[in-house]
Amino acid sequence: MSGKKTTGEKNLMFFSGRAYPELAEEVAANLGIEMTPTKLHDFANGEIYARYLESVRGCDAFVIQSHTAPINKWVMEHLIMVDALKRASAKRITVVMPFFGYARQDKKGRGREPITARLMADLFKTAGADRIMSVDLHTSQIQGFFDGPVDHLFAMPVLAGYLKDKLDPANTTIVSPDTGRVRLSERWADSLGTPVAFIHKRRDLDVANSVKVHEVVGEVQGRTCVLIDDMIDTAGTICKAADALYEQGATDVLVVATHAVFSSPAVDRMKNSRISEVIVTNSLPIPEEKQFDKLTVLSIAPLIARAITAVFSDGSVTSLFEGDS
Image (cartoon, rainbow, N blue to C red; front, side):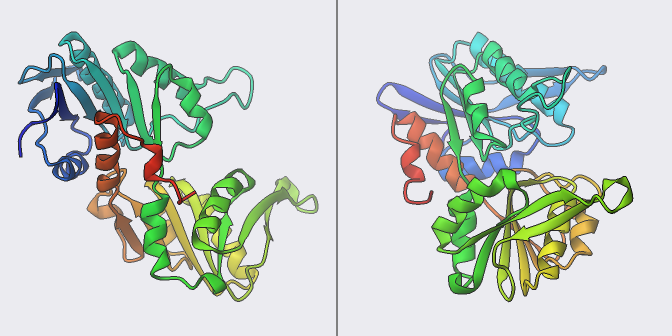
């Protein structure tokens, strides 16, 4: 492998921050190139230094960083790397963020709140990004926050491909853990050929402190239920949804999500729940202490590599997902 992939007069160069080098190395292997050597270190006060050890002038640069904990540090490093590429005269800079940090704050729910998903897009544009590539954005509207092309990749082909070998569609229901994920669940149901159900949360007016009651809308009794979400953070919502499904007669509950954030106490909640399997991708690193017997991790490195190849060769990224939506 070499550090560049050349097509005509174009050179693809691939760069990675320090947040999750294992995923970056796997993507590079799928691309058939090596990552461009980069010097990254912290100053004594925590400031980050970045310098590329090869010329990047005129290259088609792809710089990957997973926005994992400590998220503020790795977002800042990502921005600094983009700025360094711009100032070193890279021809085009594509920011590859498998997990888009701060994506949950994509609108103002109440007065005096920020819209940090838009702020993130503005920061990367200011740093010098020409294009953004991300996997399963929290909401599709985030694509409109960036003033440039956004390649919104979907992990569903990877995750659904795994489930197709395990499940009988005639006895399976795809379930949205809340009304906000119904459209995503419908896409899954179309792909797998199953019906859809969803969890409706309402307040019990007969109980003090307005305790929420989880109502299941759809046929789940005697069926295997697959709960679908874009991320698992503390796992509170997903575990309560699983309990509601079992109460309504589900025989088995699996959980599928793209991004394994796994903030405390997510792992303990899932380990102690009745959920039979938790299926996620490696968009974020999952340290050994957060791995457990019920957990299955699928790689999205080949998907990211195919998307990078399509962008570099001026091909269609959308065509990677046609027939899966």
